[in-house]
Length: 306
Ligand SMILES: Nc1ncnc2c1ncn2[C@@H]1O[C@H](COP(=O)(O)OP(=O)(O)O)[C@@H](O)[C@H]1O
Ligand SMILES: [Mg+2]
Ligand SMILES: [Zn+2]
Image 1 (tube, rainbow, N blue to C red):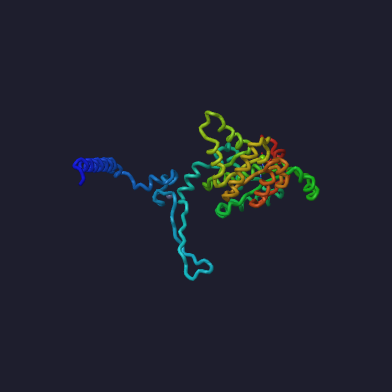
Image 2: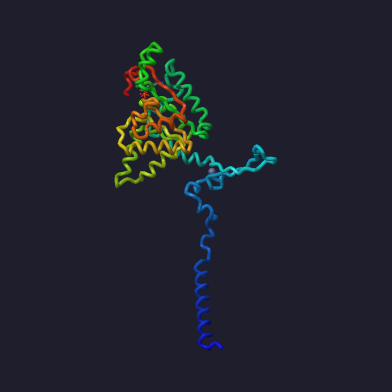
């Protein structure tokens, strides 16, 4: 037979347990967040809390469409999650390609550019690229605008004219594109390679507000990245590595990348001993190339400062 003491002890233990449970539930209730929107909005990632009515404040829109894939007897319903248009608008607030341009550069447009026999075809390709930008954003097409000194003698002979690789309007053409993207409110970054590296370097400063990772993420993820005068830096190992990771990330994620350069693809490895070959082949695989040899327009526009 159990002793009286044992029964008492069990009873006390039970009381203790019940009290603990009661305390636990009372700290959970009551719901003091009744006046706030449903929890899913709060839990969503930062960008999603900035949506509009159209996307129910989520930043994305779910649509369903019917498809009948090959080999299937009946159509199947496919769910598609698409970014709401408010998402692009928010991106454009952050990434406006012509933001850093001066008044003169903002005036460089396809409508006002001098177009002649030496750049007509090149402008045509760039104009088509802008016209088809939606498709290129889906496909992740790249554009490589280049003029290489090493090709000047051969091309000059072939065309019976004295051609140049510098001052032929590579930057000008890219800035026309940048202005066109801004006009269409398409998020894009325009940056010289020099500026890109100094942006990254600035984050090594202890007082820097941005981390290196934040800056790199910007260059990895912006829908359109325009790098002017790529492959001109005095590469230190770190710089080559950074440039490679930007190119590589953008290639893997199919992000439109537009570059101007003074090197044809085959010569990139001369500039970047570690990664030049890999970078060249990545560009080769994705880019439409525009070669710009022609008159030095800097000399033609004498009263313009370069
Ligand atoms: N199509 C054009 N119409 C008017 N000006 C141009 C055109 N192309 C180039 N320029 C002008 O010629 C100069 C050299 O052009 P730039 O784009 O800097 O050459 P690159 O980048 O090929 O060295 C600049 O002052 C630029 O404004
Ligand atoms: Mg240039
Ligand atoms: Zn929206």
